[in-house]
Image (cartoon, rainbow, N blue to C red; front, side):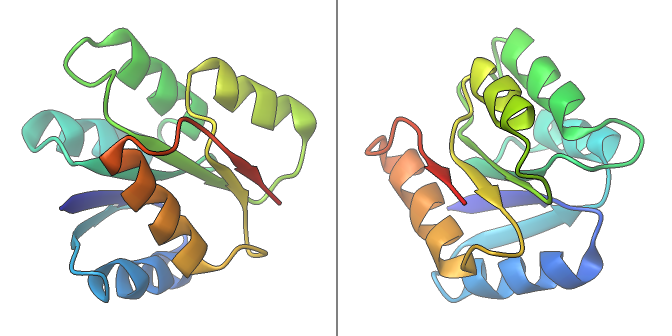
Length: 129
């Protein structure tokens, strides 16, 4: 399985990379929203771990582009954010991507488990603080 991690924070991205690699994922990392969309078009991943706070195109812009493109609309996305604002959570869920985790309070293993469940189709959506 291949995951694309879109996170501008190198330290946090490395933590997620290790967690996914211990579960035998192939992992690619990008640091901004435009690079995320380019990578998805070039090599569609099995799932995306998407931070909302990205340069060049924020996570909401990425979600909107993924949702409106038939070739990417069904790629599972898990959202991570440094915010617990209810409006951000609801906005993310409106795009159909409701696995939403607030960092740094979530375990990387919980994120990996959610991604695995989404890929298997066993988890329609979740919220975790």
